[in-house]
Length: 136
Image 1 (tube, rainbow, N blue to C red):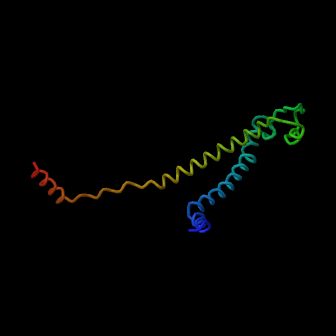
Image 2: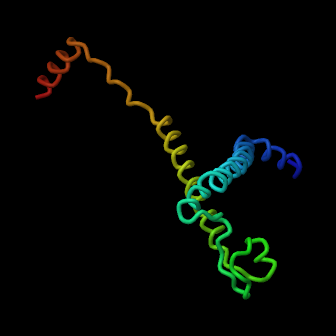
Image 3: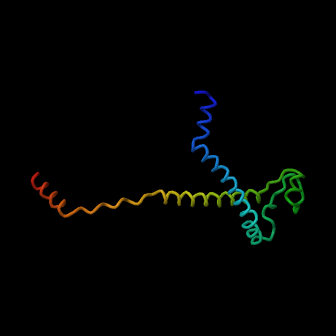
């Protein structure tokens, strides 16, 4: 078997294609969650804690004046952008929770209900009792 045909067989297998589809959907879903966190959740939290854009919270490390937008402060030198880090953390927690819920539901659907035990006829029960009594 040649290298090319072996690689083709590997690439066409279902697991590789499923993985590729999962990565693509995961990336798109990640962007949706980032938008949810950055555009919906964090502005509400920022409003509650002071009315500022939470992603612009930073500590200047190179002597920049306070109050500049984060992009301008980064041009002036190093900054500790803890607001961006917190936003990314919230985004991760939401994404992890949603994935956990999806896996939980998939596992619940995969669980099979225990097969009902068939009702044993009275004749079979009687025959079993006779068999057990004859063994004694």
